[in-house]
Image (cartoon, rainbow, N blue to C red; front, top):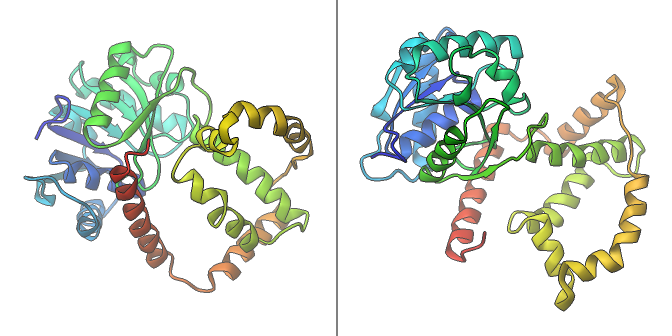
Length: 311
């Protein structure tokens, strides 16, 4: 089954993100060749894909047997129609890796990086021949569950590359957004970072515990954010007047709250407090089992959003 002209995807780097991508692409009926230099990587990839497979909704013809593996990244991308790179988040490592991909992949093949924060223009410096086919394709963890993909072009990225990446991600069931500027952390991670800054500050100041803040989000605005985004929710909060009414009446006090938000540094003491707070909150709950329960709820939520045609 072709997805926007893509039949075979190379997944370069098979950590948590790479394995999740591989499972997703396989479930969409594509051939996947994975590559990773780590010892035991092939066995780990195949084992993890098998664990994830029952949680997916494979299309007709999809099979984990369509996964192949090689330790050589050049071999992995040689016959690929799309490359999803997931290597370490270090610019020098990206440059070394993308030099190999640039030389080995067909000139028309998109090289998309899952980088969560590096700029595409910086990554593309590792591609001296075809920097125009480098783009950020940043998923949200776990990619086999969360639909969002941030597509970020760099200063040398061709418009055709952007459009092909957007079309491919949409064809495999993702919800891609295009950024008009490249920024460290892109969009979603910057929004998260803003929330984390205040959350960490509130803990540091003793205003609330780690568990209290998790509850404040998961049992409060987080429920609405999972259904509609911040602007649409704000619009609904304004009644007949919509977001215009909210901004008129709540804008001034909101500005005062912004001025009072905390500035925080991750000191060893604060890190220790945060870690201890999470440990106390989870009380020995197995993280793997907790993630599985979280993902089950996410699957249910996404199915409900689709049935009700929510954006």
